[in-house]
Image (cartoon, rainbow, N blue to C red; front, top):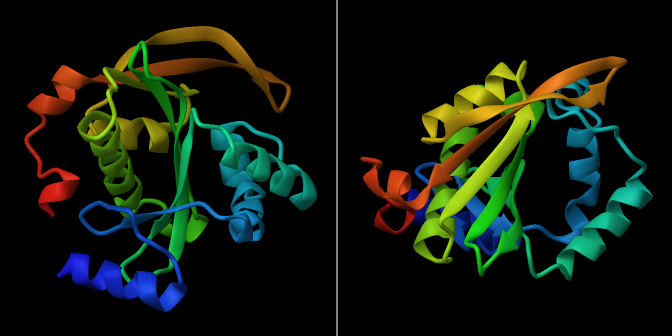
Length: 197
């Protein structure tokens, strides 16, 4: 049922859902998504938890245009079955020789805490290990970001360690947690894969 709902949503919103999770779809990020992304990035909770300084809409548009031509990254809008965009997820710094990449995830404020982030992350790791030659996918977040650490743990990521005093945010030095999911760990996960849904 979800597959048909996501296909219908793609038609209604002119988005092509190219990958799916249990209850979300992933569609390629488009230049028209800049305003929505800017709104999400300007959210104070996102700024604190992710640790970035919100930039101007123009700057974000320019960065998205540059990223579009970067063959070492794939950016997706996370969609509900009705086509509502609820987040952004990306597989960046893809190294096809070493088989490594890093994941970035940002959810819209009103859609946090509803398991959509875990669903999107599981779908993206299915893409990384099931369609791409990745051997290791990593994620980095500051150690106080309990929400992100919880999502990563639910998706099977293992905490490798801490980079002490690795970033400056709001006048404080923060430790950064490094987590990863290896191909063998992903293979051992007992959950349906995206192509089985």
